[in-house]
Image (cartoon, rainbow, N blue to C red):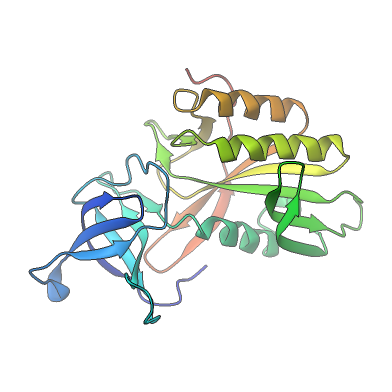
Length: 245
């Protein structure tokens, strides 16, 4: 997925109020004032909000927006790239399905987005159907992973996620109803080589994830290659469900 426009960059001053970040422009675009941009990520963003890191942002031409600039990418102090905009994850997975990067999701005839389902009134990110050899629908819940804990280990979630817990329960119910169900970790951090549940942050989520896997929910992780011009899911990486302590 290529960005529709050339991204601009600056240095992170601080991220605050969850949805805002102040940056300092550098080079020819530098000014004496800091620029406030929209942060499209409600998570803790641990490791991805270090002051002084290089931020890449897009600009909207919507005159009604109070903050026309959106934080898209980050270059970490360790020279890794991370995608901050969590709304990109679903698009990347959909693109990977269409380009047949994900072997286990090939040959479905129909893809639907944000379909209502489940007893807890959820919306599934991606619903695949009309496979020539499998009559089951495939319910796919996508999660963006950017929390790097060291040694290539990525973890999810980066904050307690009651919403994520609900999604796991819903996926289990789809398996019980005779469908395929999948939790798909879209790994948007180039330093991550495997994914584990963050038991130290949300032990309930870790317990439910293991239970879901045992009940037949498929758990996959694919990592993206990231640059200032393009993001693309390129390869499968391991998901390790042993207790992370």
